[in-house]
Image 1: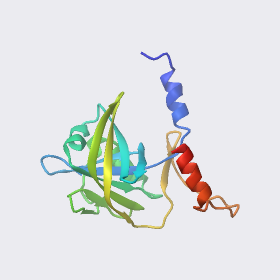
Image 2: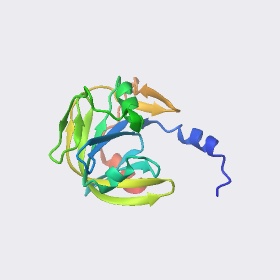
Image 3: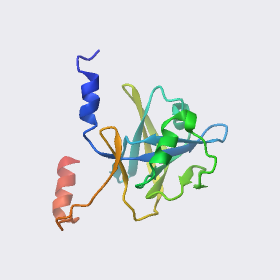
Image 4: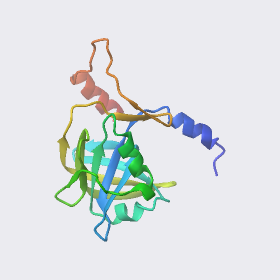
Length: 181
């Protein structure tokens, strides 16, 4: 048992702005399954690995643990309703939803910023969540729009720094990655 104030910890963790994704897979009975996730991150470029986390209490966990593949759909500004639709399993319906199926049967949602199709690589228990790692098989950058972000329990958008200074991939970035990564 922890002595931390968990409500305060949740607030502190909410200071970290995240993107919003919908991860999809196929249930053993063939149904499409989707869940809104902001605990998604890249892990490695070589091999190309990503991960996301699901609660141990998620009714969708079994489908993701048993499925061989999943797709990550990165949401764009204005897709809050889509995010909300998959944030609750009871709203997890596909009626009227535009999508295509990946080679492995996962739903690739229309009008997202992009998608990554992954083969499940590993599953790791981690406290009250499970970490699911996938090897990226292919990806698609579909739209040039602003991302949907999540901060302190609310949706928002990303605004580029207007100072005219943008990060350039150069040797300093490579040193940063090797030092911190």
